Image 1: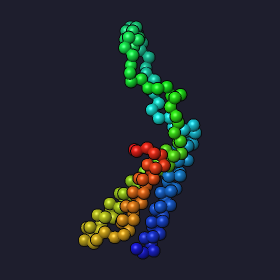
Image 2: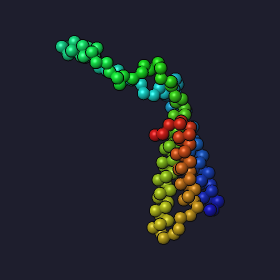
Image 3: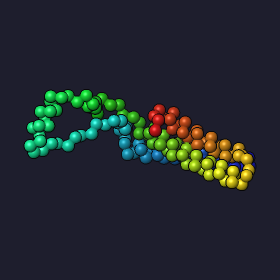
Image 4: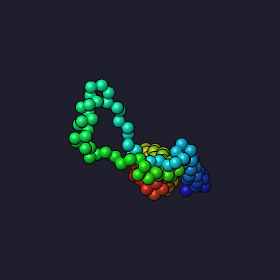
Length: 138
């Protein structure tokens, strides 16, 4: 690999870190208390003549699929969620770049070089770090 290719790889790695940190800070600013997973959705109130029928059926048949109250759910860190999304986005971008470089090399009839493998490795590292940081598979 040439010095220029090493420089490009270093820039891509720095861009991945900056994207993860920037999206992490952005998510933290939007949700300073954290992200509560599976927040129950409030149902619309039933009005009119259906109100009596709905309340009688609700009392007679308990819903087994009711969600736990939001107070019992533990909030996840918004920073790690945003950083994970940033790493995932950068990994996807680098995967597309590696695929484009691979197609270009194959169209020219040349073998795959180490630079393409390195860009694909950065993409795989982004995917793996995305999972390791937030411990959640998207």
